Length: 305
Image 1 (tube, rainbow, N blue to C red):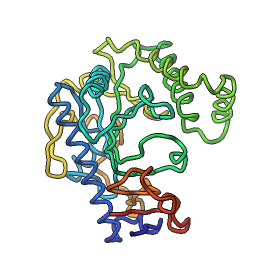
Image 2 (image 1 turned 30 degrees about the horizontal axis):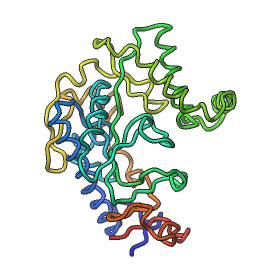
Image 3 (image 1 turned 120 degrees about the horizontal axis):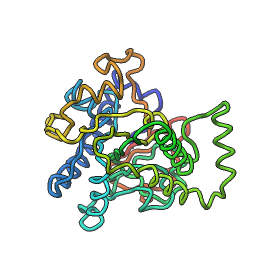
Image 4 (image 1 turned 90 degrees about the vertical axis):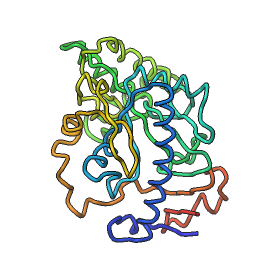
């Protein structure tokens, strides 16, 4: 068994950690392959997104210091994906989202691989959900037509996030105080129902296909809008030696998401930022021993072949 300390998250300088990251990439790309095949089989649109699309354009694969895979779908295809997955899920892979499992706090879905572990946050230990390695799938919704309707939609996005996660990202100041007050005003048992209701209300303009797209998965992303035809013209793009779908106008998408996306960050910021607590490539978290679930606190990152 190898233990990985926080000091070993310097991707560019540690060969053992590079080996670990490469194995993670292999597993995540395996999940991406399953999703790609499922979408092609069922005529569903998707595109690589965020850092995954940036990595494809700038590096031909993963960003060298990144370890996750993001894709995006228009809401109609996202909903069809969920429905069809329930009917014929590929063996060994599972779908998680707020409608499927209680305790899941994201408003986007994850596809996880069975018999793997990727424990990223301490709170995940206490939630009875699968903790395998995953790919994130983000749904795109249509922006409200303008004026008051957009402000109302923005509020619905943020309140839905708040009552789902218990936060939107504001950690201090007036905004954080307001969030705590809003959370306390509603009984906790009602938070999930209110979040789902607000999320559905925010999507009432989805039939307006000429309206810009929004991916309301964080407070910051709620404010960014993308071309209405983002998924109308997709192409196959190389990612780590294989081909996947991506919006043809990658430049517009990445400029909106990142600004000057071709500029590399300073060298001291090119580090593995997710800091998983436990990684296992052959067992679920529940299959680990208590000793393996609670490794030495001085060396909290752990991997087993």
